[in-house]
Image (cartoon, rainbow, N blue to C red):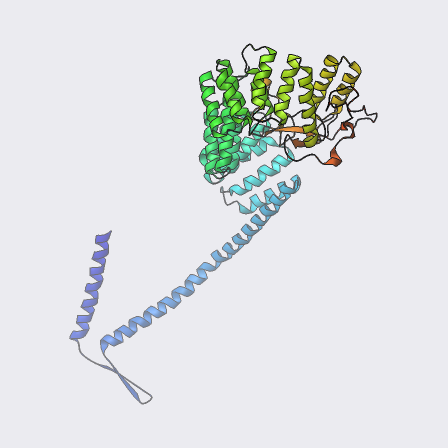
Length: 511
């Protein structure tokens, strides 16, 4: 190609030189006299003027012809642009109709946009998205899935298609397929937050903890979670992995792997009570009771927790009740007036039948709960009923406390902050689990006291187990503390009076 260009250039140059030589060898002049003026021109100059004139004429004629030829195409292009504008306007209105839930209008505008924008067999993928949404609104899942499948086959719209297919699989209860689609979407676009969250949740549910860990790392890299939140979430994921070795229907996780995961979780989030609880339970299973108790002692002064107190109670080896009480008293000295210290000592004293000490701790626990919650919890009322019946042999007073327990605030539990329902994990893992069994939210369980509940009712709101005292307006009248009876021990709390008012069920929490 380069040689032919060079040859053509040489030929043109040779022709130009030949013409110049011929004109130079034939001297002469051309004179033009007009209106008294005389113009003498050399033949070479005249030739150049002639060439320029011819070129100018040819250029003007060519432009006119080209313009005439282009007119039909420009008219067609203008009509095409107008058609395209109408098509995209229909898509915009269709998406708005889909967002408003107008299935009929969304479908009509989808067909209009598809008709306006389709060129031959080429159809813009965005029309598929609107068609899929319209089909979903009409309840035509098969058509919607067909549109999403078409979207998933094109790299530009693959994420949209995969998300629609994954949601459809979840709607059908096919979590295996949904997990596969989410993993495929995450591989195609690591910054897709929905893909990372869906993959993490379904991988953790299926016991694929290594894959879930990779999905979590992708969420952190994408900025969906900051480094601190990512570390906390990873500690929860490792705790769930370790928990599998404790529960009956858990995935096949060996004790060594579970121990390693639990230790790493405690190292990453030392104040995360479930991680420490699971590690303590695993150590106790291996007979490492002293190490297990040290784990709780290390944190009791700063982050005491009810499930850690239960784990500490159970960490002893063939103890007599009095020996257990003495061990718990050493723990209490680290945080002497915390509610959890009084709670576990009251439980130990009740088991040892040390009624005076049990009453003292239950009294103080009731006072602390009244300050923070507006009244004693159900467990505290039941403990006081046991003391009245066993210590004083007073069934009437015990019955009053049991009646009070039926209308008292429920005991603290792991409650989902997304849907407001309780977790369903068993005591072997401290009743904690990574994924809410009701709404599938990940790491959403928080240790809270349901508030405003009555027997047979459902929680109206949630109160954290620590923090500011409850609003006096919200404090039930049933929790008024009566003065101690004559002859009773100092500081004793009488059971509250039995209310004659009919109990009212609290409103249900709506997710």
